[in-house]
Length: 219
Length: 249
Image (cartoon, rainbow over all chains, first blue to last red; front, top):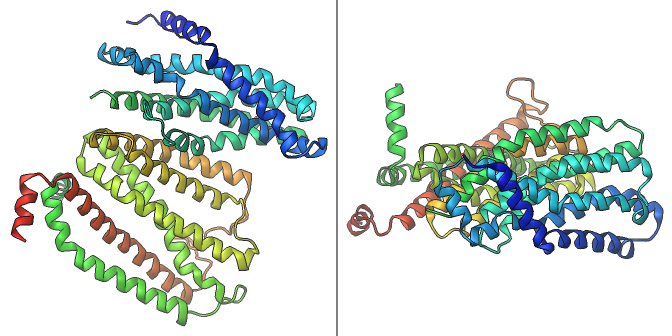
């Protein structure tokens, strides 16, 4: 039996020592957030309406930078091959990898999205649903990222993003809708519950699919 | 009966048997599908009554509805084939998915295009971000992802498995997409044909519509067989049975 705290620790060390893995999504997010007012309009009224969607789309796109990190290094140095050969249950290991990837690539952006209150004039009552929906929605996106990353290992092709972005559509819709609801004084709890349901429902399916996809690369 | 069905299923997995049988079936299916499509088009375009509200524009329904409905059915059939491939490792299921994906993508595209042409005079716009249009667009993107994934793997078996995984994940996700866009926005009219209840369309329009739907389904069967034969002959071109077959003819 593999000690999972060890794997968790190893993943943490790898990510924390490779600063680009968590800095590049953050930089991408900050740059895009500051480009929107310049490219669209600096009118607070327009930006206020666009803010929920802009933040969600930016997070979605910034995960495109990081999703290849989940497996690519382990694939190149051969550790995935060893894990597969060891006959262990890979889905828990994959889950650990996705979790650590989420902590380093999504969590900093979620914290930074607080600044959208100032930069995109998001009303303060929209902040709570923004944070909650991001906390529950982004793990699902990371799951899709893991599947896309596992399928497109070692290939630099458009198929990974082409697979991941259409899959993420429900999360995007429910997430932005939650913020818009709360801005219009409608209860947003149903959207949060649905996001949670999607996460719980898809978690085992995507884990198995990702493990199956990883096995494909080693015949 | 069950034994015969089981036998048929097992035979279906064999390339030479399928190649032989499909060669015999194809001419009949081809003639049937083309004549059905011609009959239903002529009937729908010239003889069925003009719509009271939309005028003659509505006649595009005889292309739009069959294309959209078949595009969804193809996807669901591909997902069944994907499950068969992953569970029983039946090679033919991989051939099926690979051959049907471009056909499904083409019909989804026809559905989107005819819908846009229909939308321009009736809604006054080529495209709206309506629930059904959006979920059909997502279906189209899934088809493209499946087609794109075919070429990223060197080995045929790996590619088939990868595509099966994507197809299954897609079929799990498609209802979620459909529901979420339903909550998001709806402008498209609800379905006019219902199998169990009363259809909201007059029978003079309904019969050619059903004929055109049938015609397109048979057409997909026909083209699907052609594509699968082509795929089999690419995969098996160096095998003994195929060489024997091509030297005889």
